[in-house]
Image 1 (cartoon, each protein chain N blue to C red):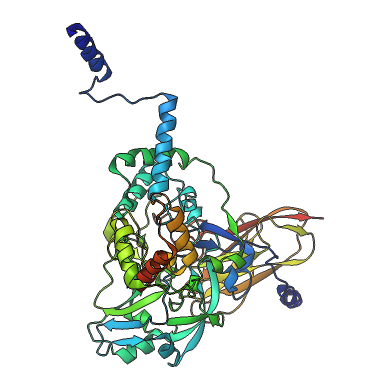
Image 2 (cartoon, chains in turn red, yellow):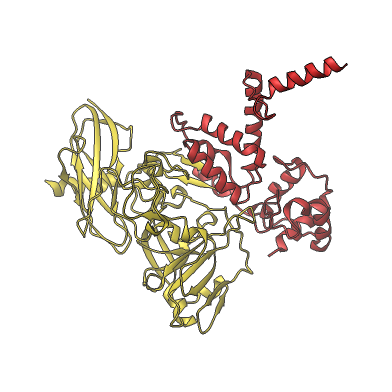
Length: 199
Length: 368
């Protein structure tokens, strides 16, 4: 048993030459996994404020990406500290200065106003009941007042609460970090009424 | 001869360059950043549906209970509904709105931000009350030196700074500076800042605050990100990719001289027949004195016919008759303002990618 333990310790020592820190795993499978994880970091922490087409149009070197990611974290992007380096590496590899540009999407101008037009006709809900529902179902992420919390963006005073179909879709299906929230229709409308009344 | 061709051109002008089915270029889906393609810049007044859109945080939805607050260093703070504002004397100005970052994608090395190329610019007729009228009614105290224009669009994360700009009192009191509720004779659309936006003719778009929530007279510029860090230019100029010490970074104010070719459009295929090369030119608070075209990549230049300035911050149209030979042609334009500043081949690089005003160019193919 002793010999076995010793050889295990030796093996560990060989694997961790510099003060116990493991060397980087350079296997292709590991690289793929890391890239997938970094992509997930981007999807989960950027889109609460802006769409990813804005990111994909950039071409920056590593220094530029480091600065941008740092700025966005300062502005509230909840990127976990341990994921920053791999996110910067992903951005630099896929959106570096020498990566060819892709053509921007186009949109029919006639369809543009409908993207933002508010839905003022939504059925009025009970804001008081909505406040209770909100505190139970939403406040831990989006903050007590709906103006944003540690991981959830502001929803009060944001376009989403003036478009009840958009609001309902997000609540029902979830989005990135947010799970779907099982609210009955009346509670959903009450929550909307509460959020619309928030100033 | 020139007169005849210009006359013919005026009729030709009426034909829309904007083809059916023409699209806006999406620089960001959310919040909306939409760029006007070259042909959309051709009309004197840019129609609303092809006017570029730039948003910091997306529309604030301000309902009928919203009031515009005018406060700070004033003797009589005001709190006005849109209907109250509409009862005040109002005026209409025709002025160019250009995003500070229009042309950002043309800087090398690239800088972060919406990757605008040529079309984050347009001209509209803006109707509203003079900001000076509101300040006069509120009574500016002697210590008041800047007017802070606060956007009501709320950032998604609490740590993201809310948008606000300060303009000096002198610019706020200029008779062209408005708080507007109409664009091209229509109610201001939501994507363009409804119910109210600032109109600051001659100055860069960042001062034209949309979804205006408050106006405050203050002793100094706002201390927020958009005055102290963003929207600043290095002076003296720096080498590409370098940074300047903070004391050399200055707040942007007036736009700089620039011209754009709107006919023909880039990559157009044309007939070898007499036609006009045409476009627009503007110079912020200055007027444009001359526009020149080069058909040999900038070696020689010929003057274009240029409209007179129609007022502070408006653009001037220009045109040049052209009878091309079959083949590929690169057309290059540059403008000169009334202080003899000429549009450079490439402007000095800056870290924000602001105020690109390099020679504009289009390439087209002429077939026999």
